[in-house]
Image 1 (cartoon, rainbow, N blue to C red):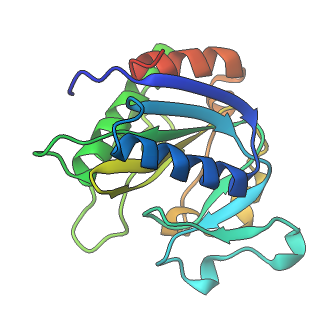
Image 2: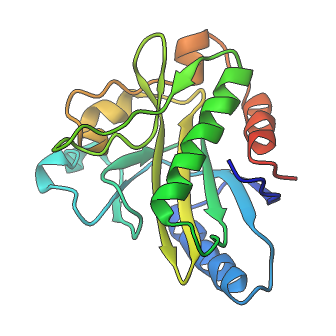
Length: 211
């Protein structure tokens, strides 16, 4: 992996629409070289976000009462909620890098962070013709613990990852997550029986060389 020093920004619960507006501003600043590469750690109130390719059949029943919002990132349906750590990455890529290269780096840095928390994890290669296996899975139980959806514009990345820490996993069962009907979503708490959001935040920031 390339050495990258990121500036760390941290918030608690931020409404998704508000976060998108701020992220757009951060991307513009990075494109104009007005700010350094940035990792923004936060959480969202309960919301489903969908990519442009998400089939209608994958959406939750509206009676569940959780909003569904379209987003400009790659990937398919993802759930965000309290107890989940979201990381938005505003990074200017080198001329020889593409967004796929950086997503792989994000996967590996999340694997590193989870390992330091005592939870062995892995990224997966996508077999030909299969739904993209972007994200991170636990090595022991084989469950998905990190969702990743990113894009780039004028050489700068946006969106990022969502790591389930200690929140309610039930909303994942009300929709088809990540385009995979059989995926079993998990959390740090489910795998280790305990979890500290403060510890997870610090460990993830360290894995991204962010301060």
